[in-house]
Length: 333
Image (tube, rainbow, N blue to C red; front, side):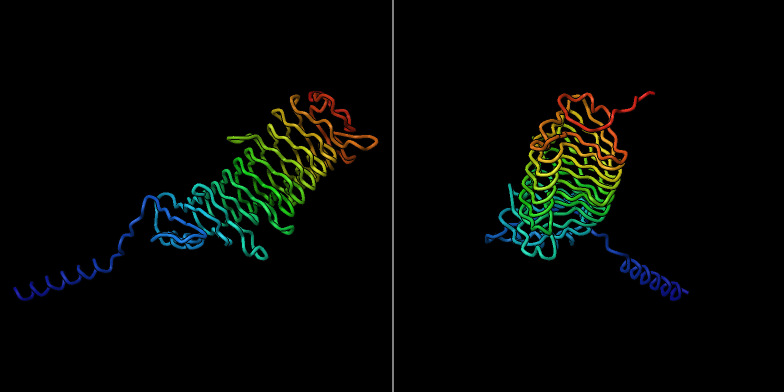
């Protein structure tokens, strides 16, 4: 009797031990993780020499908080941020990403990632926020992309915020806003680009330009239009200066809309200050300045309405603005 009980007890203990052994081992998650990158110089133990190498390390570290890459020097690489959440690329104190293979990609490509921050970094060769991503760029520079590229682009239902950034000297567009995407331009400068300063050509894009932490937005001296919007795109300009562009300051086509307010200034553009294309609409504010555009032609217009059902509101409140737009209908007829 005792032998039977003892044998059952031994079998129960062995089964319990085997069950405990097969339980999954709980993975430890760090609160935060930081990797230091020093590009172009010999590093000490634990330092990385490429951003791409640091990102590979961070993919193997479980965290409950934020993953940070501290970067210094000039990194000659194309950086792909794919599938990261809560990631910061931080200049330490500043850094350069110099894309070395721009024939196939931009220098910095963020895709399928949420809450990605890029701070104090100069990107040579263009950057994108792509595929349902949420990106925030602070005090960065995007420059010297080729004519086939752009300084910065947001695509595929992504949302990006540029805070006091500079987009300059790119061969093509300065900023590209793709279909059904949103860009917040908080301060900063878009200048000296080979095409439009900012463009949302494929429809459904949203641009909100407003004061940043250090500056108000300036869109100047671009080889195309300052800002162009097409096919049901939306533009909101708050305290924005659009000056000295080779085309129109702001061009709207294809049922696009814009509001211009908070003392925005659109002036000294070679084309019209504001061109309102077919089925498009613009609302002005009395504290805006839209003068001194389209000079050098027989009949210069600061604001021009194309003949196919374009419309304005409160245009008459501006001082000194020359226009061909029809008289506005009463708001409450």
